[in-house]
Amino acid sequence: MAEAAYVRCKDYPGIQFTKRLSRIQNETIKRAEVAAWFRNFDEAEKLFLDVDRRDLAVAMRKRLGDWFKVVQLLKTGSGGNDAEMEEAYNEVNMCRMNVFFVHVTCFSAFMKLYFPLLFPIDWQLFCGEAQMG
Image (cartoon, rainbow, N blue to C red; front, side, top):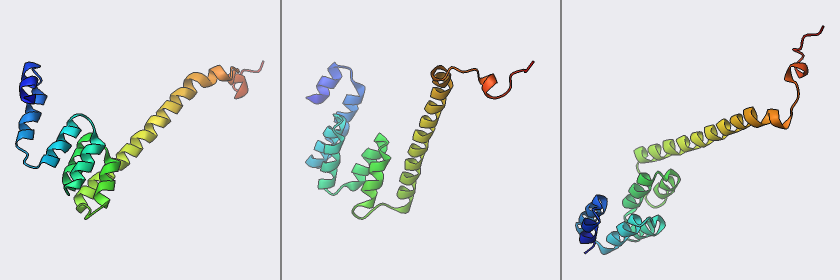
């Protein structure tokens, strides 16, 4: 029924989703996939963990780019292998570096644009670069 609705709407990703869903045997995993499809990621993660499929919860969080949650999931339970942990920590560090550079760039732009407006002084006189004479 859902597939027919997606066909009528010409929603190709929806058609693919329903076909993939029909191949899943476990009803809880199906419910988790539906929750993820409708962007209820916390509920999907909970359902994956309820059926002891931490690997599916980790894969979903990786697709979302939620690397802090990936690290948290890998640390709980049996944990992940070294390659997965290294990948997650590298991505977390990249997120932190990106946030740092965004803040620095924004602050630098702010200073260049607004500082002269806030303190309108003659910088040549202030810095002693004015010609005396």
